[in-house]
Length: 116
Image (cartoon, rainbow, N blue to C red; front, side, top):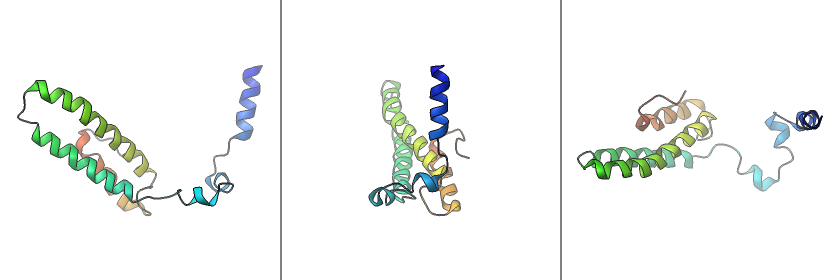
């Protein structure tokens, strides 16, 4: 009974259309909604650092490679995954083609295709 009541409340309050959901936002918040080119700069930086680190630690002993790969590499990989998610919603550039190219570029250090 309680589950049915919660389900009906969630169903009646759910609004999937972005036009009506952003209509009641404050003007200061509306300025933050939309594409942000800083995503492209962060993505370029993370890919550069990841490729640079993979090149510089290639000759190190495994005792050093594993901690660097787990900490720095894991942090950058998670950041790039989040960037690919944002880019897939076309939030880096205003048009779709640059977002697609940036998403493919962000996927380069991953090794497996994750952007699509």
